[in-house]
Length: 477
Ligand code: SAJ
Image (tube, rainbow, N blue to C red; front, top):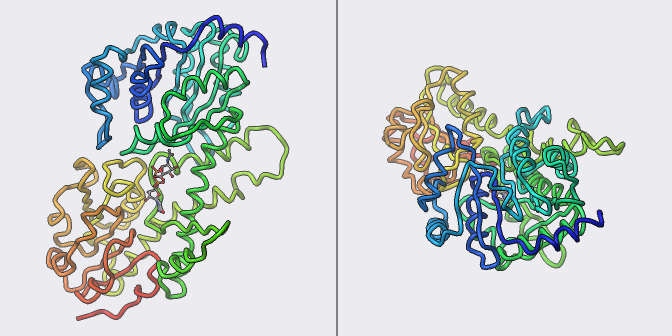
């Protein structure tokens, strides 16, 4: 650690002004919480004035919330801090010169996940802007989910080249990954423990000074910047792995003709001191913006670290295998649909299939990387006509997405449940059958939301993920 940085930070004094780069699901709530904290005087929200998201600048400056979906407390907080003139959104990155601390909340998608090719372009562009304008003693805190090694590598190099300064000597650098979830952004930022990884002790201390005022129930957990990057990507890789284990168990139970949910609750009964069996839920696949990419960031960290090790790179990684299992589930739903139709001597060619649920999580409009998309592609390739329903996701003619459930189910040879929206839990089997107009429509349940016996009794051909006990039921006439 450089000797100079502690002196530089002492001279700069406490953090008073903060810059948050990237006004998205993470940047907006954190900027508002920083602005609302008594410890700080002012927050700049930085947003590129691009065609797709430039509109957020004026909205935020009018005290309006550009994020879709319900976010408890956020609307009021945006109005409060803009009225109090403690927050302003701008596309003018030169204001970074007045910020004591700058957090970076820019998305880090993959260009090609399977080939471990991330798209760090937006991140590097943001870091260049920061490097160009930041002043001595600034703390830069990278919050985006990145490949382990990025903070000490690409981020540090970009900031040093753009600023002509040295990290750990002239400016502080840390990685403090976000753990927010749609629908509970504010609460997560205040109540979850915050992983803070400084590149050195002085950077760590400065980052703790920045994040402490945000926390109500959460505590700061200190570690190195690279350990923080591994923690974030691994916590999602582990969740993906647990889901994959549940999915493989479901396929197993179908193979031997038993009910995976009975087995699941049997396993969960083994508990007690130090015993855990976190069996998550099998389903039609894993979507969203986190679990679908963070495993590849984790594995890529080992691939680019340059260290010789026994780590089983991408082809043999357990975590990547889990991704393959989860990505197979929409194909399994396709196989169940084909098998269901075959029982009434139908094929997918010209069949009408109703997909119920496009959002990747229940009761949400978030449709990032939805497993239903892979399913729809397979159906279209097989010559089926696909109608999609989702009560939350906006209507989309390109995928025949309608909010009219009756219309979507009308004439359907099969319905496939992809999202566990509450609305689907109350579907009445005889009503649905009437809508389809067929004596033996197929029902494929990817989220365990319908009662198999009710649908079977009504004449449906039922197929459910993990329902080996029901999937070969006799057809009721
Ligand atoms: N899923 C299953 N079975 C399960 C749980 C989820 O198939 O038992 C599927 C969901 O249907 C969805 C996908 O996995 O398609 C992802 O679901 P998720 O609940 O993990 O939601 P995410 O992607 O929003 O994950 C976020 C993560 N949070 C952050 O990255 C900050 C994750 O770490 C959290 O554990 C998760 O929220 C959460 O617990 O809500």
